[in-house]
Length: 130
Length: 210
Image 1 (tube, rainbow over the protein chains, first blue to last red):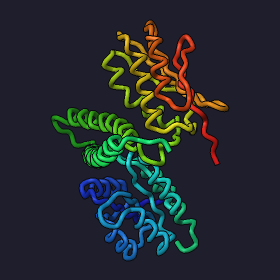
Image 2: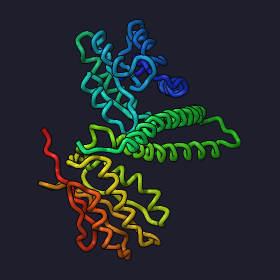
Image 3: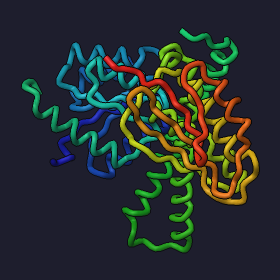
Image 4: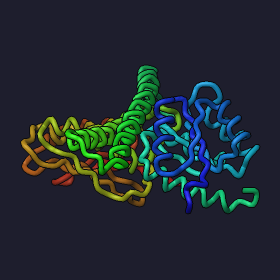
């Protein structure tokens, strides 16, 4: 799968975390944009049409699970990977009920994230309106 | 629903929030160190005097972020254990791993190590998470109570029909205080604790699913 065609949106209020993660993905030829809160994330989804969104559950303002529900209603073709707290699988399970593609815990293993992105991209390509 | 003291809920809630912050701190350290490692790899042909020192330091950071991640996971689970949805039952597989992670330091101070074995599939029990953690941790404390020079505390989980079992095997050569078995048993409202001659077996009622 050619990663240069990927359009990923990373959403987290931890600016240093999300911007460094985007740089690391870009070094691997993956196009990643960032948003630092739920509102900007929803705007970025509408404007940039990412195929996959990596979304932190716990953010100030609009909560991650609310962002997930809005994205699932408005852009069901976007695959959402949730970032949840260590030891708090409940958020991940709830997110899966709302239609998240997967959930992962921070700190991330980059190789595992890329594997999950690859699977999410395959699923995205399989949707009729993708 | 079993009652949990307000103090335990308060400590859990504050600790859980602090652990969430720690998780963000570790995530930033991991990605920052990772980016430095990526840059070194991209410039593999560019040699400079302290390259190997830098690579070694990045490896140390990565190792200790992993170590912190394990502790963070265990402490978060401990912090969330007084939550309402974990008071009547939990997954023994997850909480046995938590006991192992939380007791690592305690056992290391005694000069020993903890080793957990058993299935990785879920073993739901009808005993709350906080109670499982407390009984498991105190059982490990009991197993190394007499003093250990070296050796391994063996934790093992096994699935059964009516009970799932967490067993604790003291290090070889350690004679455990058998009076402590009754004390550990008293920690459980449901379930029982027994000594079979080589290991302490904590029997927890299996929870039927569905």
